[in-house]
Length: 373
Image 1 (cartoon, rainbow, N blue to C red):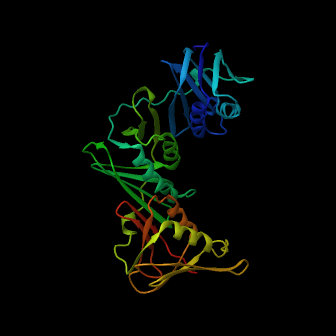
Image 2 (image 1 turned 180 degrees about the vertical axis):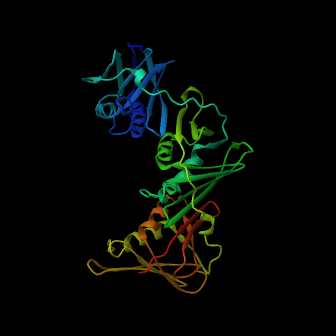
Image 3 (image 1 turned 45 degrees about the vertical axis):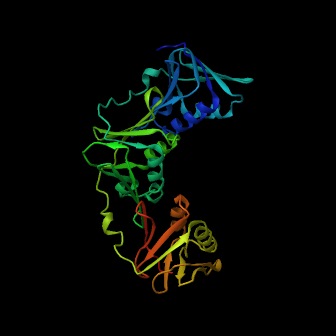
């Protein structure tokens, strides 16, 4: 073990990196090294490594002055807490044997750590990238689908996001059985071999936190049943290896309605406000909101015996079809509207007992099951 690691780094950059790394680490366990973050100073850069049973992560920290290369392995929770609470613009690190000293303006912390050799070696996967996509595109696709996945469900396959690639075209799909989100986008480059995998939501949430620069490329490779993401380029690239979810994703294409009798385009901000207001007097027993569409107006109403009732109206323009009243979970609608980065959304309806669809052109489709209200 190199036991004299010394460096100075930008505090804000370190805090950003350590919080992402700490999100990988388990909060409890029988292997102390897996509750830690490994720090490696070399080539005038600082790298943070963290891992759990499914994910291995390496993050470079910008703005570092390495006085002496070396390594340290310290508890993730302590390191993250100390970094957040330190004052000043820089942090000074020095590791002597297994003790990491952190100094900032008017403060010093000595953290008892472990031998860095106890940290599990990251998987060495030799694979060429199957595709490269811009960070901006991938973040958008993940954001438009991950919210619809099942948070806690025994059907493990829907606890992740399906990522399909045909040529240079990407399609991401998330569902919890009551709603379905489909987002499409283009790769910068790709191989000729198509692919389809289910990626855990934890990995994708971490990836979105890493891909902060919209111009960064994200390379995606597959090896030994895992996906390898490289965010950025060269020595400043972050890397994440994640296991994949086994199983079969539900046959979602059949769920998306192929035709509709009613259609209208709404302002996203106005619709969001109306749905939120209509949900104020819902309850656990009465979660649904009735949405009554006519040629000129949308009326949203809710009623709960123990809480009260409400009625919200908003004008409509260009409604196509006969009037219809459909019940939906307002939370599911707001979830979708929150991630829409377009001024307008199109609503398509077939019948009172049929799913409703929200669309943004051909790039985003959201299917929501109706409720009896």
